[in-house]
Amino acid sequence: MFTRLKSIFATSGGNSSADNDIRLNVYATVSPLPKPSFPHTLLGERDLSDPELHGHLEGFIGYTLSRGDGEMTHTRYHVMRHLQRVQHHVSLMLSSNALPEFARWACQANAIVFDDDGRICDPEGRVLIDSQGAGDPTAELTYPADALERKSRSEARLLADGIAVRGSLPPIIGEHEVQWRTADEVAGRVMALLAVSAFAEGIRDNDPLDLGQIRERLPAAFSYFSQAEQAFLQAATPDTHVVTQMGWRYESTAILAWAAGLWPELPSPGEICDVSGLTGHLLDASAHGLPPTHGLRPANEILDALDETIRWHWVIREAELGRREFPPNVIPGVIRERHHALNWLVGFERADWDDVTTPT
Image 1 (cartoon, rainbow, N blue to C red):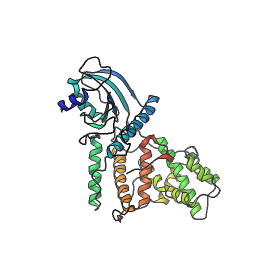
Image 2: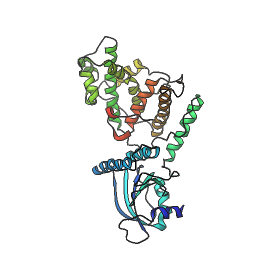
Image 3: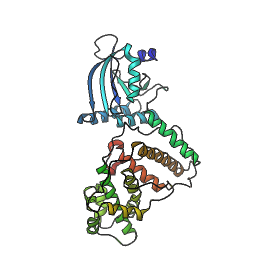
Image 4: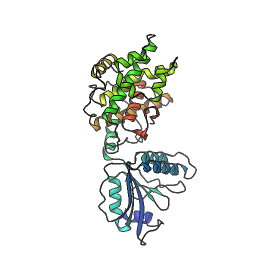
């Protein structure tokens, strides 16, 4: 490994202080950042508290997507996803003799590396994407150990249900990569979702609620509505498709209430939530404002649910494309809502509720 690292990185240009000094930029997704144990000169370090880092990462994503012919390859896509999860950017100078220790540290930090020749590399120095868009087919993006273990467990559970998923589907984020919403944010989102779900249900059943009734029962919700939700509640004649979409929000309500410890358990993917029980419980709990929470459930429980949900969602999309049969033990609307809600909860793409995407 040392020979490969030295041959890859030692040719980098830049303003190094000696012939065998190498300047590297490291983009790590985990927090806290492991402390480097190898000799180096720190040139700069910043995390998400620096308001300029987000813009820098957006620019780096643009650079990544513009290399070569710009075609969205598997590697390019996952480098982009990595950059969206970055929490630390470190610039440092080190001797080529320190490269083996650097590689071990970069793996622990779940990092990709950018050198002065415009190459994006994995921790071992293999080129993921160079300045012309080419790369080494043996290069690999790293993933945290807990994310890899979670992926294996999800695949095993689905296989036990007779559902095989593509092994190349990547892991989701690890526990030390997540930028969690706060418990109060989640409780507020639960109240907002409950309100729009009930409003949609009333329209569907030709027994609409007025906003005064909702404000009386769920006053805290009004501080947490998204722009799309506000438009829906204020529309003179809501679009039928939007009414249906908002009616499914009970499922988002249920999984976020579960994540915040406000609801005891989730049904299987083949069952809808207990709407009556959920609504009654949350109305009782929120009689004086936001329902009280004591923090989110353990991270591993929530991430297990997200990882399995994403793989179920992939199965559904494959079935919709005619590539496999629809599984009999899953309700697509339940999975879609869970995926949306959990992606919001873990800060996927740092998106607000209306802008959350659910790629598989």
